[in-house]
View 1 (spheres, rainbow, N blue to C red):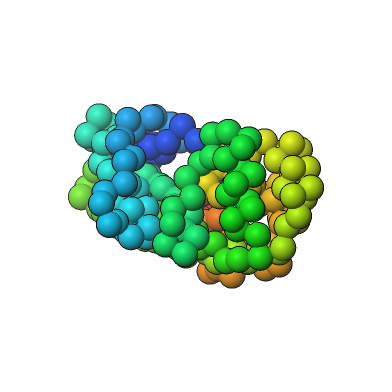
View 2 (cartoon, helix red, strand yellow):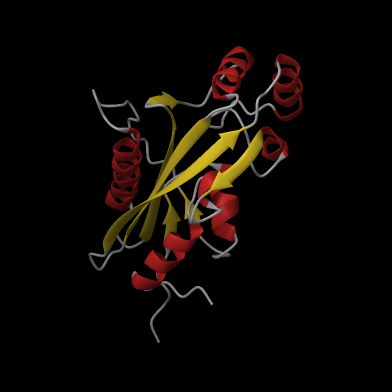
Length: 194
């Protein structure tokens, strides 16, 4: 009997790790050290897919025996990327800009296997924000401090009250790792999940 393949999440994101733990109890994490600078005129979905592949490949180069998962998410407001805000002021600005509008989240995942398996999938989630008052935004940011989240909210927490609706094929994608596609690709790369 052969040993199960080692799985490596090419991310130090606690959100992605928590998501992956839902389907895989044991895996390692490593920072991929990938330059995440956008390319000129790069579409948000293309950026997410490129970065997911780059993260997976960087980690696979250092851990060639592992099945590697790379993921990236890009928030898109009318073609304008909403990066992680990093500050309270920027979070306020992003949420004010999203108020009453639709933001599209492109979440890409790439799985690489030591046997040569490679696939990248990009999930698209449409988030429809309700109209937010300045006070709504201030209360939300103070309560949740979403400074490390693209779009300035955490849908798995209080952020859900900011929306009118969410449209997607995989509800886990909005948190940063589309688990339906990830589970399928892991199985195809030889990882037993059940």
